[in-house]
Image (cartoon, rainbow, N blue to C red; front, side, top):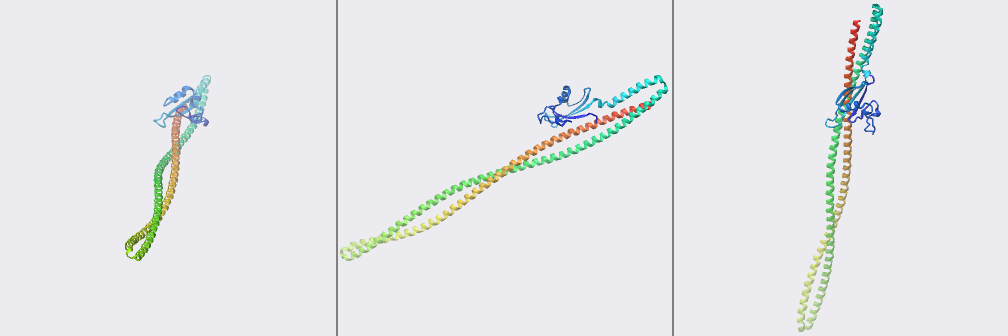
Length: 396
């Protein structure tokens, strides 16, 4: 490469992305004002930032620049800038001019007074100088070949690195898609869990209503049992009254028999009362039988109601546990959704960073190719210089 050559990469605002001094890089990220216009003349800065590509010679330095658009549809762009000292580029030519000029002056100064003999000596001296120049050119050739090989190796390394980064970008993109798919599945599971939780809450409400109704039925059955007990008590009273009435009717019949003819009418009434008393007693017995059956049925219903109440309470407890389980599942899935979203965001940021690295590697690759092209041009110029030296050697 040329001695003193420097390479820069700047963005559309003139901030350094790449600089020989690392502390000047990424000034817009670190709130620093290290920009192109602080290190280069204003006219050079304007031309570099406003043109696609170009070549600038300000007498002291040679500038070559080329714009790179990472995203064609975006206003952002990068500029690859090469700065080479003017004297470094034309050093070989200037040296040859100086040597040739000195040789000519020396030849004129010596040939005129000394004649042919001195001229011959000067020619020999010129040959020696030409040989020295030829040897120097050969060394330059060797150096240029070595630099060309290094530039080729650099381009190959950059290409390999770019390929690896492309593979990493594809892998990162696939991971991002998988994270998005996992987030979508988790969101669907969260929706299902929320639906299940809502169904359990509705079941809980139904169980609460059923518990209230079962409790109301139990209260009504208890009230019915109390009324049946009251009916049984009244039936017993009626049965006792019937027995007492029957005894009174029997006693009345006995007294009527004793009264003879005068007691016949009273005997008829006593018999009728006894008959009614017997019917009342039979009715009371039937009522007692029915009340007993009702009481048994009520007791069975009370037992069934108590079992139903226990079952409802158990169902309520299970439904509450299920609701809590659904809530826990929903919280876990929601946490998983948040984590997947964070992973997806991190992968996206990583993908953006990889894309920036790939773009930077493309720029470096392009710079390496330009360096190789510059070396080839220098090599061509050196070959021309060698031809001139050989021609001069043959002439002398």
